Length: 179
Image (cartoon, rainbow, N blue to C red; front, side, top):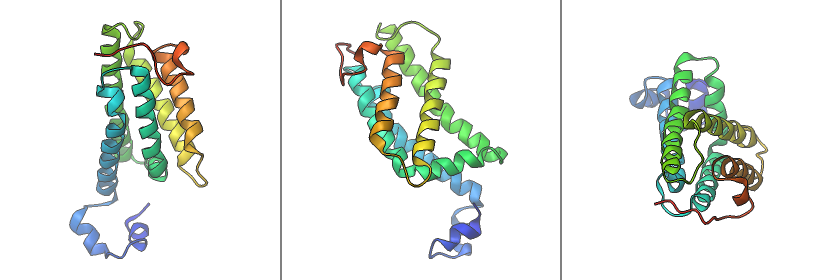
């Protein structure tokens, strides 16, 4: 992606672009920050909600899949750019790291309440988040996009069985209660 190719898709001039952004990296960073806000908003029920963590997981992953379906090509562009540009690589790493921190904190809190078995939470949070990222990029990062429902169901199956137990996978709720 270049400033020229980006400008070709808009009605604004190159000089107008540079009034707001120093370069394409700054634009991509701003867009990535906006995407993080959207995904965190979608994931808020699981990250910060009270009640049934299985139902909250369903709700959060449904929202996350919806956002990623809409933003899939951008996710692919930034993850691809991260392999060839050090600044994009750092931005992508920071983006994923913020979700790792949030998931790790949630797992630790649920472990303290006895909702999740004891294990080292950071590697599991890392693995789940990288699986989510890779899955949505593969499913939604190119056209034609995959249907969102099977992606949601796959991610729910993996996350719930990993964290809360396989007995809750087929249900949309559990008798677990987060306070």
